[in-house]
Image (cartoon, rainbow, N blue to C red):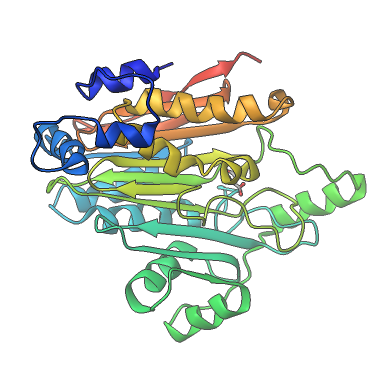
Amino acid sequence: MFSRRKFLSKLGLTTFGIGLSGVYSSCNANDKAGPTATIDQLAKNERKAKPTIISTWYHGLPANEAGWKIIEKGGRAVDAVEQGVRVPEADPKSTSVGYGGKPDREGNVTLDACIMDEKGNCGSVCFLKNFMHPISVARKVMDESPHVMMAGIGAQEFALSKGFKKMNLLTPESKIAWEEWTTENNYKPMINVENHDTIGMLALDQSGHMAGACTTSGLAYKMHGRVGDSPIIGAGLFVDNEVGGAVATGHGEKVIETVGSFLVVELMRQGASPQEACEEAVHRIIKRNKDYQDIQIGYLAMNMKGDIGSFCIHKGFNYALYQDEKNQMVESKFYHKN
Ligand code: ASP
């Protein structure tokens, strides 16, 4: 756990007893560039970009491979994350993302996704049916619409107008699993090991720019119309090219309640390492939820140097890390041993 004291000392501050908003205004009386510039300057001075891709869960490995093909040629991080997460979106074996994603309790596969580029532009779709690649629809929302977020039928019409083709996303295997689930008639909107496999990806390219993407079919057997954290900018994903980025997976309602990914990035802005920031964001959720033992949340974060952090409530969250020519799985640190 990092402390407020540690934040301040990282920022070279010695004044205590002030609110965090006061940190900025009290930071250095001799700094003519102004308080915010001081912190931004710190990030810039320390920045030595190390091209890196990180993404949640095992399906992150092939996703990272696809993204890396773009990064190694000097391509943009935003193209890498879009192409990367399209891999599990198209894979029927990834049953929490795209094609083959588990449906809601009425048998509809509804998808959520968002994307952010290095300029802070964002695009998002939620409650999208019948399109295999919600991340690419989100990208079109970002690049070719005046809006940030589109939902439901409007998002479907937008996707059609941009040339995306409709298809049935419910695979025979997902249909059988859903039919078996309906016989139990046991609706519990909780995250367990079988159903928290959203892919969140962050990439740092050779120019030192960061982008992120997040895509999911959401909670398995959710209520029709339910939207989780994954398409919400600041909850499932946030990127600030001066500071770093974060993605979330797990029980989306809890992430939204604490604006989790934005929180992680803001903590990094104030001096926390990616690891410290992820731990603090998980602790916020634990503090608010006495039933945290029934909740799984995982955060994954990266700063502009390519330092990585991750933390989850229960053991079991892992992520794929592509850095220094290696693509490998890494186990996340966790709060509570099952
Ligand atoms: N966060 C996603 C949601 O709540 C689910 C997940 O990560 O598995 O929709």
